[in-house]
Length: 71
Image 1 (spheres, rainbow, N blue to C red):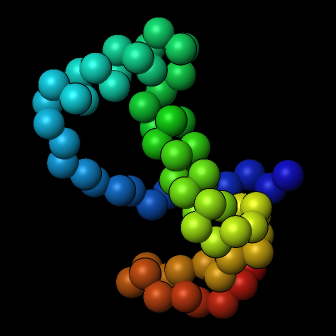
Image 2 (tube, rainbow, N blue to C red):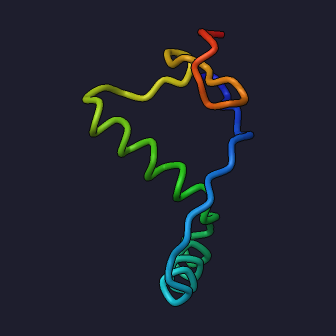
């Protein structure tokens, strides 16, 4: 299994109360909010695309978010 490149940042705005509950639930499961969000995004990609997620199969976006080809 390839280690994913985790250098892209995703900023979202949510209700502060929802954020507090989310962080509390993550802590109760001994996981981080980032881990949960990465898992949810991966599951969404798999559900929507109809195939398992394999980072090495996807084009690598360049600094401007455009695909620069495959690794």
